[in-house]
Image 1 (cartoon, protein in one colour):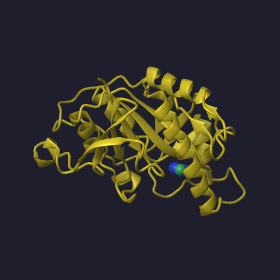
Image 2 (cartoon, protein in one colour):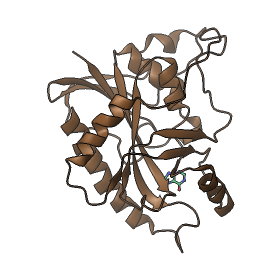
Image 3 (cartoon, helix red, strand yellow):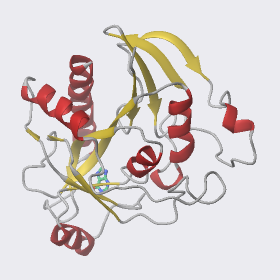
Length: 254
Ligand code: HPA
């Protein structure tokens, strides 16, 4: 039986549809006690359960409660923990700002490319400590068959707002939002979406040979794309309804 992992982001911290088998304590993994590997501890417990007859692992990227900022997430420990529990592939869920004109609040995108603007994050296993130097092929950062599963699921789903089967994800450092000039630059670079957690997660999954795709919910227009910042209640409402749609999507495609 295949095991699917879901990494939830802002607005998706639990998967309550899951029939829970076990909650794995973040300190229970073999690597957390192996100082030579120096990987540290995952963001939160990993919930193992069954959904539609499939074994599923759920991890809240920002921890529980939602507290770890994007640049402090231990992406490496998160991915190795999921691998240790037998994850065969990963669906990542990310909240983003919309740059492309279609990517308005509530819109769901299945990105196909990434530009990485982050810095100073532990972004590789091939650091000569955890593993010897190696180079992965990252031409196509997301697994195409997982992307197609998401896109097919979205095409059959009644959505409040639309979806896109593409998107260049610009990964920024955060936790602050971008300046107008930064968003203009990202747009010129070709970015459709901007978020803070897409990298190094996608690259680390590739380094571990774990197929990985992301589904992104636009929660706000990127800096300078609207006259004023949306009120927090409006963003919360978009986050709640959109993440609910993503839960339904993931439940359906499993
Ligand atoms: N910028 C960066 N990351 C984000 C944004 C944004 O506007 N919205 C949600 N995540």
